[in-house]
Image (cartoon, rainbow, N blue to C red; front, side, top):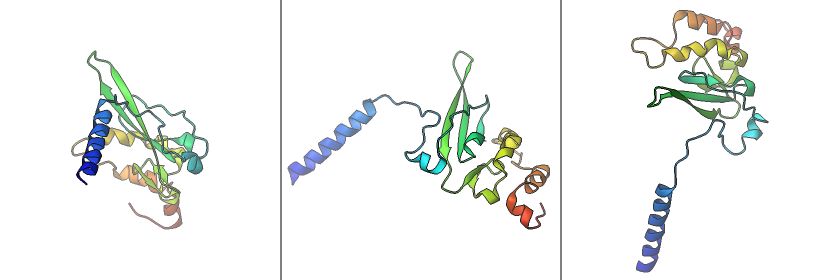
Amino acid sequence: MVQASFCLSHTALTLVAVAVALPRSKRAAYELPDGVEFLVGSVKTSFTCPAKNGYFADVDNACQIFHVCNVVPKEDGSTEVQQYSFLCGNQTVFNQFSLTCALPEDAIPCGSSADFFYLNDRIGQEKVNLHDDADLQRAVQIIPRYQQAPFKA
């Protein structure tokens, strides 16, 4: 029993040492889970991050994929834009208005997503709400669920 315990401990330590020794690679854009094509079909890799931080719907993939963009300053004064891609759950799409995955009837139409990219500029700003009354009015006019029932913002 002691020998088996030693073997397991030794194996675990070896695996940890190998994992630490391997160089870490940064996550690439469109590095998505296996089987993504069963949910999305053929993934179009046309989206590139703008030179700004935020969450962005991928319109070319019917908003089933979204990207987190992160601008990182470098020592030489230039910047690098990191792009991380994510898949929304089955039967959901990225809602650029709420910056979440939602049922299509609860989301702005995918084709209108770029009209709401400006909301990213408000993330992290103190004393600034993500949405103002004008944003709410624009959204309720195009969100399918609110077309069926009256809604007052």
